[in-house]
Structure formats: C-alpha cells, structure tokens
Image (cartoon, rainbow, N blue to C red; front, side):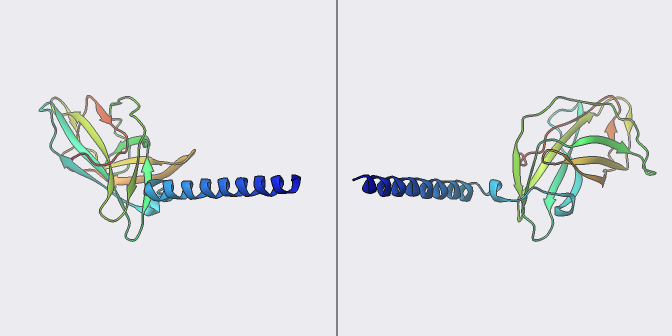
Length: 170
C-alpha cells in the first residue's frame, strides 16, 4: 500500500507540474508582449513628427518607436535624460516638467509601433531644437542613448511635457 501511495503521489505531482508548464506556455502565447525580447537601440527606428494638438495653447509632437525590419520587441516605461539640442549638439535647456506616467509595455514590430507624446506651449517664446536626445528605457538599467532629429516647428520655451511610452492613441 505504501508503494502505491508513493507512485500515486509522484504521478499527481508530475501531472500538476505539467499543467503548470502548459498554463504558463498558454499565458505566454496569449500575451505576445511577454514573449518578445526587450527593445534595444539597434532594434528601433525612432522619429519625431508634428501632430495636431487637442488644445490651441499647446504644440504637440509624437516620438514614434518603430521596429527595424524583421524585428519584434517590446518597450515601455519612460525615457531618461531627455534633452533638446541645437544643430551643434548643445543642450538648449528647455523647461522640462511633468509627472511619472503609468507604466505600460507595447509590442513593436510589423505594423505595430509605440509612441511617446510631447506637449509644449504654443503661445509666447519658442525654441527651435535640431535634435532630441534621451536614453531608452532599459530593464533595471539605463537603455541606449539615442539622438533623433526634431521637426522645424520647434517647442515652447515655457514648458515641455513628455508622457510615457505607450501604444499609439487613436
């Protein structure tokens, strides 16, 4: 009888472990974001575009994080060390402000991209950076430092607010 219980217990434990592995695999398959590797600077083609602002008092821009051809990866959180630069690469000391946005991750690849929205005042003095530079989010560490061309429309000198990296709105 003792040997039967040992075998039955071992069989029950083995089947429980198998169910846990299958459940974890199914959860990962239903969430492709979890299965994709984290995006690095080499995985992404990043660009900045003007966009229509919902407020007449603000300018709006979107930083698009598009996967390089053949790449699928995930990105989320916020960028670090955001700086606006002149054509010579000097910091123009834009008035950055804002708060920590909620954390989310987005899968980029194929037709999917991630976005970071930037708002600044459209009334009053303006600054005209040539580039924006920032560190990508890393996993527990600082990600790659990237520099991206900024549109000729410029930014407001009184404030610049940037959100977190998210799936595109609309």
